[in-house]
Image (cartoon, rainbow, N blue to C red; front, side):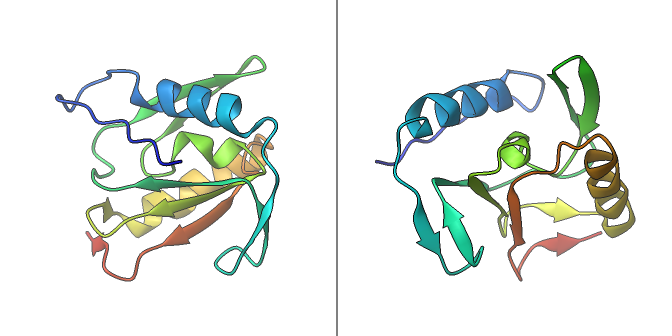
Amino acid sequence: MIYSVLGGFFGDEGKGKIVSALVEEKTKDAKPFFSNFAKANIKAYNIRINGGPNGGHALEIKNIRISGHVLPSTITNPNILNIVGAGCAIYLDGLVQEIENFKKANLFKGFLAIDDNVEII
């Protein structure tokens, strides 16, 4: 089954919270399948299709508050392949710092793939 969460505004609408809640609910009893992209068993894909590093989203997980800009909120789930799609813009230094911050907080648990056609700024 495929779900899409779309927002009409560029501000904080809670799209990440909705996606994270959907992923948790829909994958809790799901059987893992092998992903050639992740080279591992996963339960779902989460694909970010647009946006860039200028905004951001705050995540609060187990009393840890962390900010993200490019990483999908489901990067904290070890069963998800997160894809940053071609409609996204990436500032490479910022993305590297974001990944390091999530790893330091022990929140980078999923898999990450970046489309070859993202915009590099």
